[in-house]
Length: 118
Length: 112
Picture (cartoon, rainbow over the protein chains, first blue to last red):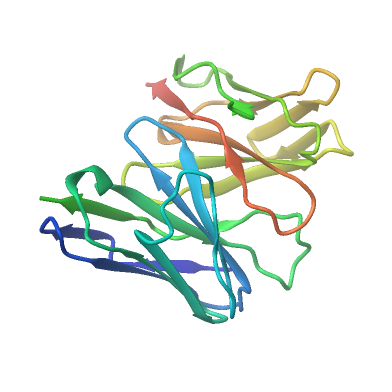
């Protein structure tokens, strides 16, 4: 089946530094990927839709200058948390659908990245 | 305003019995519904889905029921096994490559 790989799975960084998270579709090309964030015991909240070759679409309340999304190729989207602060500590997850299948199908998720800002 | 609601944060079931997880939604544009299983520090894994043109979909021990008029769906697991213990998320989407909207999840504990 289709696989989405996310890296790193865990990162600890100092406050004020930037962290890049990669999301790759391993056996299909994804023109669109989605980035979610999950707080403890909460739902997965959509942050932004990453579009290959164009600007990402951010959800209301998500700072586009803080969470930089780049979708430079059909198999890779990156999320960069800039000038990270402790309140950015969270679990970040990406997803994508396999375009070879009907659009109305399940999305495949990466393994997630646990970000801790100290 | 939450468009997908899972009102039970947790559920405890004895091994071998049926687990029923419920989900309600408010957006009439949703036409595809999914259940995901999630372990801590991992991404969600797809379990089963149902299109709005159906009212039931079965896959082994897992059955999803959809009641469009009530905007309600449920996941039945029978018989429940200890390995089913996880957080289950209900998700919905509208037609096309639109993002999934998730409920808050229900933590299922299957007791041996």
